[in-house]
Length: 60
Image (cartoon, rainbow, N blue to C red; front, side, top):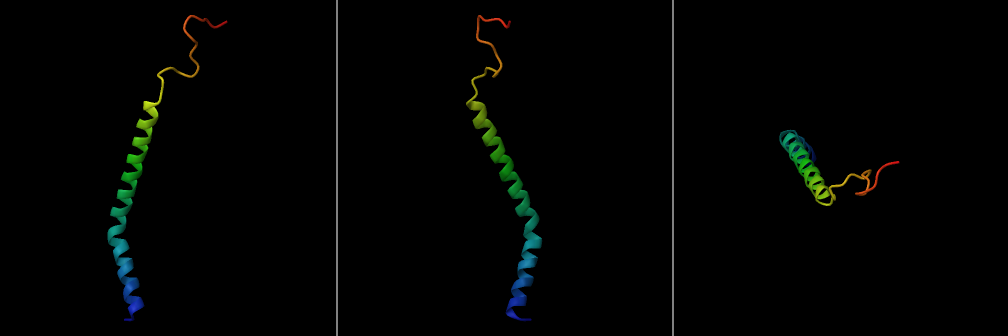
C-alpha cells in the first residue's frame, strides 16, 4: 500500500473512532457557552420589565 493510501486509511479510522467523542465534546462546550452567556445577561438585568410604569403613575 502506498504511503498516501496508508495515511488516508489511518485518517478515516481516526475520524471514525474519535469523531463521536469530538462531537459530544463540542456540543458540551457550546452548551456551557450558552449557559455562561445567559448568566452574564441575567446579571445585567435591572429586575424591572420593559413595559412597567414608573411608581406613582396610573395608566390612562
